[in-house]
Length: 360
Image (cartoon, rainbow, N blue to C red):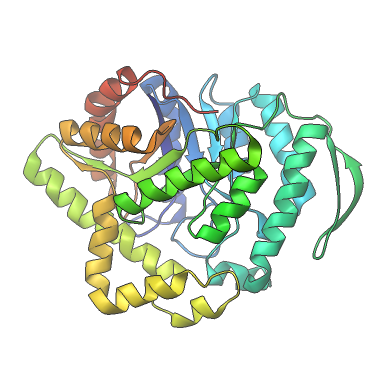
């Protein structure tokens, strides 16, 4: 099956300054292709040490020049924070210089600190996403961008160079709420899944998305891609300790960054879904919620991580899984051991299993 490596520039370890965090993740990226990963991914965030990556396409263009065949994915580009023309041009350029290796993941954003920093109204994010995504996707297919919408007006311009090939089948989006799922299916996007709901719920929603997509588009969607913050060790006790500490710290940082404890998030149009999330945290307690979120990430001995990955891949009919192996404040020695154990003991059996599972 397809296995990708996610790069997460998270600065939770006070012993590493921002530049050290960047160097550490780049060091993993430099080894990934030779070590057998099929793709490299990074997400977009701004203004905090939660994840220091203002432009995934900038990093991926650098990595295109450092690699030969590995796929290059965004998880995700947050469209309301960008000029759609620049996104389309940069995506097309990266596709050209990489020989068609781009996997495009898109989203509309959730971090209030980021919307505030860009002086944008979060209440407009859903409409902006729809208008921007419609324009970008059409432009990547036709080589022409133009749009006359409510929030976005774009006179006709051409893309030069255009993408190497169609982005149908290699464009993905996150869709947490049912309303977002309808939008993404209508745009023809595959699902980029983050482990943040009970697995039974994720399985049911993914199946419903597949049916909705087929009804709207007349064909099956691209197989989903699942993202996991993964810990692994050959010693069972140490494996349990890694998962309990670093997956939990990642979960805690997510709650803080997205302000899930702030009830006013649900009052913003387009973010009503998060009222239920806030109620759950209030009911069960923050530690319980962090533990739940951490428990959804893959972790354990190599055999356990292989079993967890293959089980979810088969339940969700995934195209592939992206594992992030350095996060949550891991110091350098812990990060290196986590990565090396995964490469030596987990990656080979995953690559050998289910060879039909591929992305893009």
